[in-house]
Amino acid sequence: MFQVGSVFVPVTNLKKSKRWYEEHLDVREIDSWEGGAGFFFPYGSAQLGLIEVSEPQPTEFIIEKNQKNVYFNFVVADIDAAYKRLNDSGVETTDIHEFGGMKHFDFFDPDQNAFSVVDEDLNSPFHKENVRKMQQK
Image 1 (cartoon, one colour):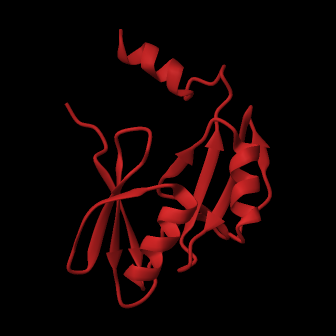
Image 2 (cartoon, one colour):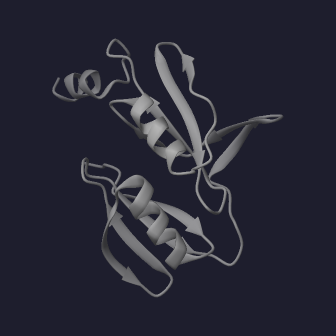
Image 3 (cartoon, helix red, strand yellow):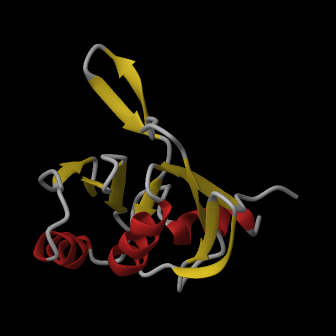
């Protein structure tokens, strides 16, 4: 019945951010409106919306003390290629880390919005193929 339709990201310069997201995340514009724009990814069904705001707003929350967590992540099939591509194009990233068979790193957009990139292990219950099996039950 329910599924994620769109994820919205606050940006302070819509024109600049549109170009950045198209260049670095391969999104394609669906349409734009006063103060915002909607995009689709070449794969998957979730959409991305950029909403212009007057000052930066967090895309992550605090778990405890200095530990933060992003609200959503991007899944890739080849995390090393995604990491290299972002770094080669000058995008700020953290190092790649491994946790429980999953590899992940964070990257930052022009507003310093933080996003995670993950590459799930095939044996993880969170891997899309294992989730798909659970959906079919």
